[in-house]
Length: 330
Image (tube, rainbow, N blue to C red):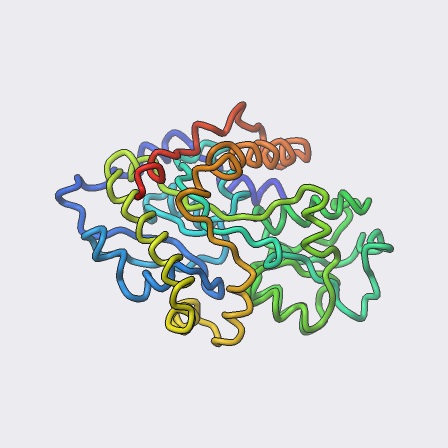
């Protein structure tokens, strides 16, 4: 487990080796990280190239399997913005020195991320301890992983006794459907497929009742934020425009989003309906960038320190959350 988290460790030599971005006048293109099978309001703007037009540069969209992979690509200088990076991989990355900051909340999705028990296992929250010794798949170092650990702690299950497999959601769904796993954890489309062959260990509402929150952030590299602050603000403005467009024109927007997400329209609409997209006024409120995001990151990092999975948490996560860009959005 510790080896998985160690992949995010940032050495001084690595940081020095990453080249800086081109000056504003010379910048021709940027790369934005996103997930497939994760339909989001901003994908209208992605598909229709609203970002390219507003930012004045070519915007390349690169799909990733997990937030920790996004963070690694950003540290390597390959990605400037990540849309919908899980709060957990972000918190782990910055705790270990990654030069990143959160500039917004992409979405919250308590109902769209969970662990599913295979129907033939006959295990639920009442006898959850029977998961010990069983094969369980989860993308380690993600929001899903954090939720699983918190859920198992609440149910009195010793997570160290699981036969744990680090597996991305799509692969976990395939193995789960084949009956190769007792429990699998994931999100979006893969989670929908898992639910057809089992049941959730705890529902989202039950998890929220014990304080488990689930949301993704809009992350940028420090270099990009410092050298191109206007582009960060424009990216957020376009994102809010797309959210408004989805609300005002759902029939036009949803097919575009489904195609960009690589999903069937019906499945995409189901997943999309379980998302909440905060816009400017919500973003700068105490619930989100005004304090809630920072507090939750501290909670996540302290939890991982207690488990010995990261070396140390930051004393305060306010320095890695920057509200100034959303404050400029009109």
